[in-house]
Amino acid sequence: MIRYRSTNCAAPAADLREALMRGQAPDRGLYLPERFPTLDVHTRRSFAEREYADIATQVLAPYTEGLLAPDELAELCRQAYDFPVPLEPVRDEDRVYILRLDRGPTASFKDFAARWMARVLSRLVARSGRPLTILTATSGDTGSAVASAFHRVPGIRVVVLFPREEVSDRQRRQMTTLGDNIRTVALNGKFDDCQALVKQAFADPALEGLNLSSANSINVGRLLPQSVYYFYAAARVAGPEQAVDVVVPSGNFGNMMGAVIARLMGLPVRRLVVPVNRNDEFPRYLATGRYEKVVPSRACLSNAMNVGHPSNLARLIAVYGGWMDETGRICQEPDLAAMRRDLYSVSVSDDETRAAIRQAWERHRLLLEPHGAVAWWGFQLYRRETSARPVPTVVLETAHPAKFPEEIERLLGFRPEEPAALKALDHLPESCDTLEPRYEQFRDYLLALPRP
Ligand SMILES: *Cc1c(COP(=O)(O)O)cnc(C)c1O
Image (cartoon, rainbow, N blue to C red; front, top):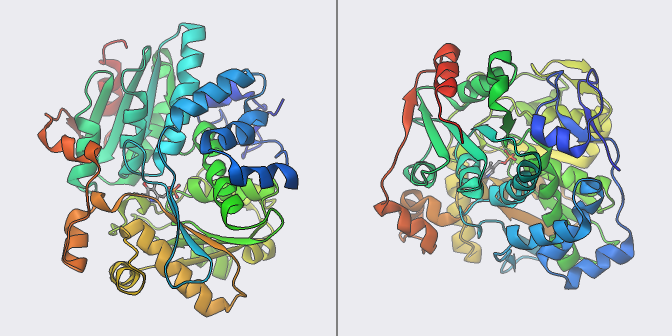
């Protein structure tokens, strides 16, 4: 059975149930599996022929051992992954593929993790009989994915905080139109303020009775399922021993940590390319070896990546032998040379993001939205700057273009086709509370909520 250790090393190792329930470790670190079982060549080759849910079951089985029976895990993966996962070769490119992770119910890649975790947690709550409050901060897509994944799950209540001015109409409607067990709070502040309130609530003994849990990307239940699609994609574009490059547009670094985990499990990722928007703390860190958060975080077109201090860096640094505490201070240096060998990161401006949307369409008839466009531009820079020998490359598109209809129409002259689930939102009533970024007010709000 795999146990989960805190990146701050001052809390006891936890089993998966405890790590899922706590979200954050008691020493304010993030949980990380104590070891990463490898998948052999034969298994990874078999993935080329197998369905997504089936691959998820095999990749995740060692992590859920002791908590879920194999049949239970397989059933839960089938329920969570009931939508297509398209992998498209890019026209006029040599072995470059777009992995579209945007076909879930809320049209962003966050559905992959949220839907899995909701199903695991609902089983735990059913067993314990103790209701749970999921508290989550979102810069756009986490909230809708989490809210949708937990909507009407008995015994679980969800409170989503989002920065009032920083989410699109669509993103807000995806959260505020659900109702039932889903409460939404529009904060007069930034994403960082939302995150700070959530962190403080978790540390507040006055809220213990609420049985708080986090579905943020800090929860290890959100992290593990994000390793699966790298196995799925690599098996479809390359042999099991052939190196691939992977490009992941990044904000809080949970998605890219999925790729790091896949690599630790034996996937031959040559370079993991992690383009970011103008929140450029990570590429600057790789270049200089000095870490400075971006405070306040910068509002960019790719708004789900407006993160000035990615929580998951603590995990990345831990994997490379270092220690970053919860404030972003590096207490022990990681192996920076190894990080530079394995990772490539670059900051992409909004102008470049727009240019990428235009270029991808004009040159390849490839339709991208701002997050995927950051990835695409970063990939072009990576090829130019490193003159790397081409290997099969998987570029992630993390949201559906129809979530950004105005921007795309302005750039390309047409509106992307909308998935039915998004279209329906325009006619549903919204319900939402507004708060200031003050902790006492937030705590009172939580304490006044009815029981789930
Ligand atoms: C959340 C999100 C990202 C960033 O993912 P991280 O795991 O936070 O790095 C990228 N694109 C979209 C569409 C997102 O919703």
